Image (cartoon, rainbow, N blue to C red; front, side):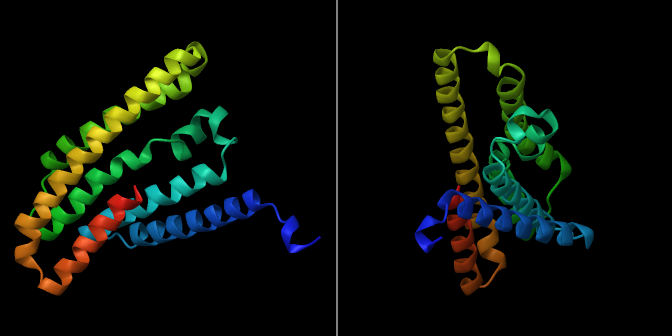
Length: 183
């Protein structure tokens, strides 16, 4: 066996599996420490991205099991925008439960719609209907993405900027832009 005989797909799945484990362990540590404020939302971001890596590493396994479909199936990155908003909102001031519920309803509604159509009704749709649903879901994701991008950017510029020093503000913008670019 030579170096060129290595299956690149297996290597990629292994890397995704290891990244997923690392992110989930970090999330578990932060949650076990009963983190409050911004750390709690960073733990949720790590958990979502860790499960996203697991989704790719275990493709084919989770698709036919409803519990695994809920746990590591598609759609969880839709929550990243609202969680980032909550993270920056906790830095800038008081984050109220009503605000959290209001901003979780949009991605949660999409996620429930995705789960129901993706797992429960997937065999009932023709290829044409599935393509139209994929286009519709992509449009909804794009709208949600831009909605949270603009709201969070406004929060950073109006409130976070006043609280942190300019050097930290530049790092905050870098974090925000890189996370959205990654999405």
